[in-house]
Amino acid sequence: MDYLLTPVQKALKEAIKGFVALEVPPLRATAAPDKEIVEALVLKLGEFLREREERPEIDGGVPLSGVETVMVLEEILKCLPAAGPEPTAARLFGGLSPELRSSAASLGSARGLLAPCFGRAFGRSGPEASGHDCGALDQELADVLTAIEAARLMTYRAAILEDEGRRDPEESTEAKRQAEELASRAAVLASLIKKGEDHET
Image 1 (tube, one colour):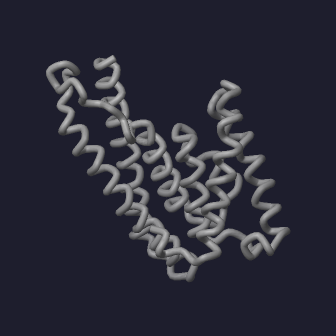
Image 2 (cartoon, rainbow, N blue to C red):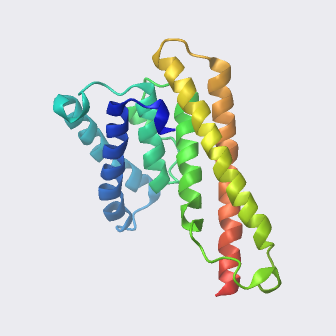
């Protein structure tokens, strides 16, 4: 969905990816409960965003728009898919509607849950060995990933409308519904794929 973003927003997205890649692995290595990991990440992210506002040469130094908030939440939840939209969203992103906060978090969670399935060797021994229909799981994975992209487009579009003062409650609610459904589908699918891989090892 990057074609919907301005150059400044694309730069912010890359900066957030770098921040998450740098900060999340050490936090996860502490084996702390998810809530403590999220709390620590929220504090570090708050510092990162404040520094961004104080240094306009980074990417404009303006408060986050709705689209940028969606990007940030999605990137965080890709790495912490079990964390959910709270407390991250409420602590830092009060300006965006609750529906779009939830949608962004659900999309990130869905992508994060499926990330371990990318590039897997599942299906090497066929369904007879694993007890699973490998072709059906591969098709479901493709379907869910396609649906995530469609839901992301809807979420970005709804966020753009909010930024322009033309909020569409129906579109925001539908984006939330679709994203939450995809997060549930992703959790079930990731579990099935993991079971299939376990059968093969």
